[in-house]
Amino acid sequence: MHKFVAALTAVLPLAAAAPYDLDSRNSTPGCTSISLGDFAWTIENFAYHASYTFSTPAHQISSGDVTFNLTNPAFPEEKVSCTAYSTWLQDFFYGNINYDCSVPEASSTKTSFSFSRPSGELNINQTWICDDEDSQYPGYGTVDLTLDCEESYYQNPNWQPGQIYSSRVITCAPVSLPLTPHDKTAVA
Image 1 (cartoon, rainbow, N blue to C red):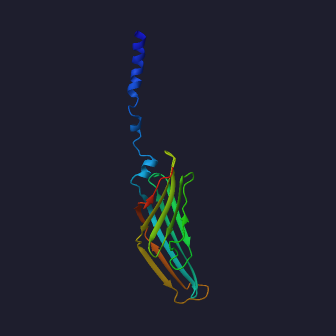
Image 2: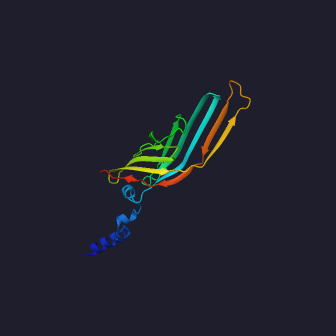
Image 3: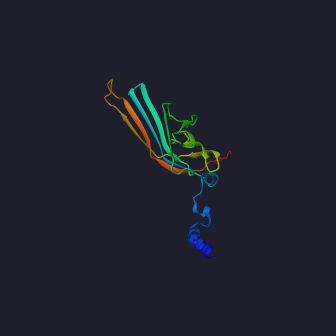
């Protein structure tokens, strides 16, 4: 009996140190919980830039570009980088082309977007996989962006061949905002 009490006395401090409820240690929601919950992407620093250069009165060299980062709340440490470049005149982006975004190495997300400069509509299409329940989530979202843009224009009053005849530059201030998907499902 003495050995039993000694053994019990030796083990008692270890039992008191063990957590009562192992799940209470992990109060951070998992990927699946976040994906099924009140979910919104974060669009960071969406910027639009356009340049129209005439090397002669009849020869135009023009382009536009879009850049932004996208964060999925199920993977808050992972920023997806989205960039597009276009020479399609006049507004460069019309919402009819999907551009793939760059994701960090070993990411479980695949992301693309389309943008229409005339309407300001940005469409996001992202699919991600949650390892905690091995589920796949495709999500689609749309937001109408109101861009605050400045335009500068220069025309060379004494233009000679070999010089720039005119240039027009449009630069929009970066926009950051949340985007709630209008369609999100789970595929097991």
